[in-house]
Every structure is written in structure tokens, then in C-alpha cells.
Image 1: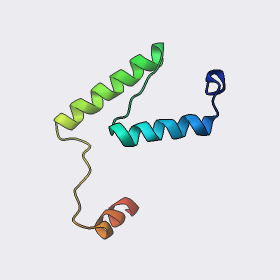
Image 2 (image 1 turned 45 degrees about the vertical axis):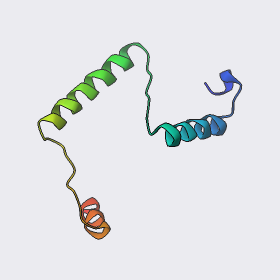
Image 3 (image 1 turned 90 degrees about the horizontal axis):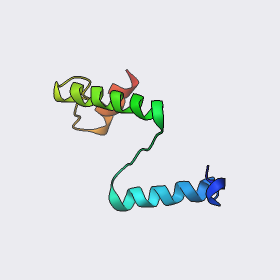
Image 4 (image 1 turned 90 degrees about the vertical axis):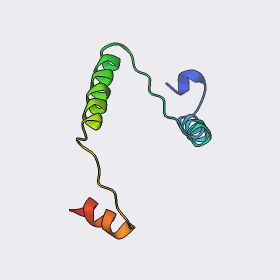
Length: 71
């Protein structure tokens, strides 16, 4: 896909990362069934977040966070 735009993959990724750093936003785009499946999943995850499900715990220090991730 990058080649079709006349860009290398690394230059495309670098441009995307620079935009992310500047805007602090992530944008996704998909076609057809993939787009519908992604929307359904995001809607379900948003609903679970509103209900307090699947939330990561908060940590006061890095050691506790690392211990949690390794468990």
C-alpha cells in the first residue's frame, strides 16, 4: 500500500508517528466487513469500560506495575 503511494513503508510509518506525537490522536480506517467488526468490538469495549469491566489497576510505582504485568 505504501508503494502505491510512492512511499517506503518506513517513511509512511515515520510520518504517521510524527502526526501521532503532534496531535495525540490515533485514527483507524477499514473497509467493509472489517470496519463493521471493528466498530462492534470498539462499541463492546466502550460499554464494558462504562460498566467498570476490563479496567487495568492503577499503580503508585513502576515495580508494582511490572509485578502485575509478570503475574
